[in-house]
Length: 595
Ligand code: MV4
Image 1: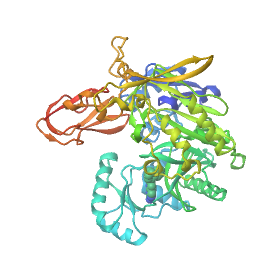
Image 2: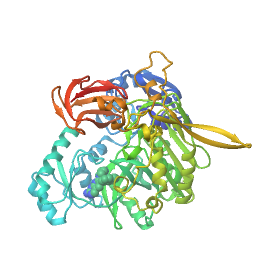
Image 3: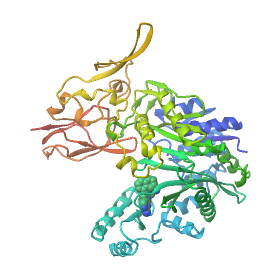
């Protein structure tokens, strides 16, 4: 067995891996950026080493710095988690060259699956149908038109080196083909450095069902169970569950067998996930994720298998500790992603900042995988996943009601989170019936009534310039009976006590309305403010330009998402206070617009 594992990651997944290592008696090495010096994964690991830097590129994606820590610590294995280096073959090969084990699949399999055309070819070698489509690089709009006329519209143009939905264009008719192809190729080139695209028939109301597989280096590959990840928003999963609701067991068995054949067709070992689209009783191979996924705990909950422990075993050269027939799936599990995002009004704006209060749910069959504790800062430089709440029940309804109970216990202050949206999702009749598909959150779910933590600022914060009200909960006793009373009081500016606290921390203590249009009485004066902490990636106008109300004037990146900052009045740009690359804090004025 491996004896000392370096976790090349941060947040909840680094914490997750450290826990299993400790159970297996394996020493752990954490690495950290300057911002993560006191992070939870650093506190929990046996040893921790600085990588320096703030951004991912400077720290968790710095190959040389990580190789240096491997040498200094004497680690014999590296767990990459998800994201960062988890699907990077240069990194996997670089550590192998040091005689260190990459806890993941062989680089050749990552390469086959990284190219979506070659992954479709591999699937068909395993006798598994992809979504009807073409397995060659698209050369002209005429091919799009011919394909659409043959299989029916709409069709999807996808980036061969993309994935996760980025770079996909849905084409509804022949007239749209040329423009869609050009824009897909441009986006692919910009996003992935390669412009190659290919064609698939576009399925209009599919469910996203994925199959967990795991294999060893002795030729064994098994499927562990499927997950339904249909509750998504802009390709960000919100809720995952297993088993998939309303999913016949014959289909499950067939999908499991298909996933094993796909894995075997590319010489796979370690943990992986084969994604399918499922519609009208049929399933089609979509892509394979060659890593441990965020949502792996729902599979753990229904099988009792620790997937990280199994990853470490097979990476150590041991055979799988179970056979296909040993796997027992029991009951139902649901996972909610608790992201630092404000779901108010369905906008899901990034909400980095300091977690000032955190009350963790607990109780029967309730698991909370968390990357932070109270007092920790959720940085704008990393992804926005704060934690994952998982419940198990004997059936779906028991797991769902348990989740709603657990959500009532969860209290997070200082940042807004997706928790408020989850309550709406889990209570919705479509979700209860298991009838939600991939477009449901965006097209059918009404989140207009949802307020995040920042939504606790009174909606009455007033276009009319009245001061914002904040909610204060007070307990009172009347005739010996306790009542909880909500008071709406003036939002008092909080005086930062700690000297030298950076732009992020203290400012958040005074939450702002999520809507840029509600940034206070000064809006009419033509100040353009940013609604959240982040980095300006682009300024879209120059001094002297005339702008219309609602026009995008700058692009702000926070937590890997780009957000357009819009002018709140029409007029002429008189002053620009920022440039691309500059960090800004919530509420900063970045531009002035005169009449
Ligand atoms: C599709 C599709 C319909 N037809 N391909 C988006 C994520 C990426 N893995 C592939 N995606 C899709 N591909 C065809 N031919 C619909 C989606 C899709 C989707 C898929 C899975 C989960 C959520 C989704 C949300 C919108 C679109």
